[in-house]
Length: 355
Ligand code: PLP
Ligand code: COI
Image 1 (cartoon, rainbow, N blue to C red):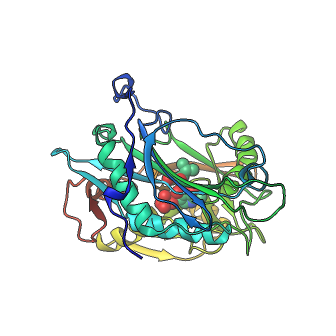
Image 2 (image 1 turned 120 degrees about the horizontal axis):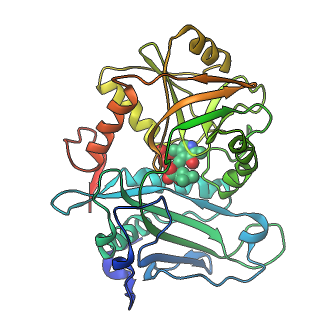
Image 3 (image 1 turned 135 degrees about the horizontal axis):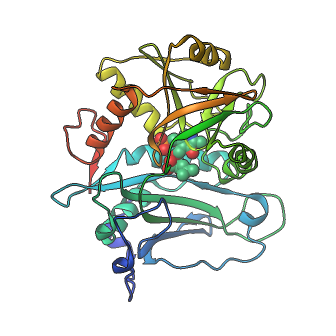
């Protein structure tokens, strides 16, 4: 099959740009959206050519299967601009591959990699001016696919929409992140869809997270669904734990998202001479480490959250504070990854992709 190129992607420009109405110095996360979006339809058994159109609402039939059976997946990525106005993406191929892993699990047709990658590049060319340059801000990119095909039959749809839209964004968390270790509810189960970025995984977390928020925590730390003894991941992040000078994180499984930030941190830490261990961590080990002072740090890692230090955790009605470290692994690794993402340093790993 011939590779899609930029000229195959029809562009319809907006007549009224919203760019001048946006305060780039006060960006929340994912609240304002750029002028255009990429859209691509699956029908008649194949993905049609993608197009770039003005950002606008979508009309769907009330029987569209997304509304009833939740066939919906998404990705999260970011674009950055350096001081020369050059634009960079971070490991975009990883997002394409993961989108298609999610697609397969949700019985959604896989998107050709070049439709995603060439489509995204063409969109970023058009939306270049929407990429923030202030420290801590970036253009958050949200590729997603959902079932637009009609019918109440509980089976995969025959039509889908693949859309990429973008939102100039600031930090995901506005303050300290205090987490609750969850033992009653589960995010995912063996054989389930936890490893996929399926919309339903997030819907299922909202209620337990609301309960945790009412108690003063920002996120839930999920434990394994069988024993609730092992730490798995947070609502929108993988979790790292520093005990003494070793950085620990759970292995990924069919219950845990294979985070791109997580795997980048593991490689970066190794390059920085930080000892890492990918192994299951018991909640009891975390509690014990907190009590004996060997728990030095805990942080979440994800595209939206980057690296977000965790200030404390709640478990069985008790709160455990994590004291701030002067030279934390979290700040060291965060600076390293941001410097690579924003073209401030060499990229020995080949992660940065220039537009
Ligand atoms: N875990 C969950 C449940 C997430 O939603 C995310 C965010 O994408 C992550 C982990 C981190 O993944 P990544 O680093 O690829 O963004
Ligand atoms: C991301 O980090 O990009 C995500 O998709 C997490 C999301 C829940 C904001």
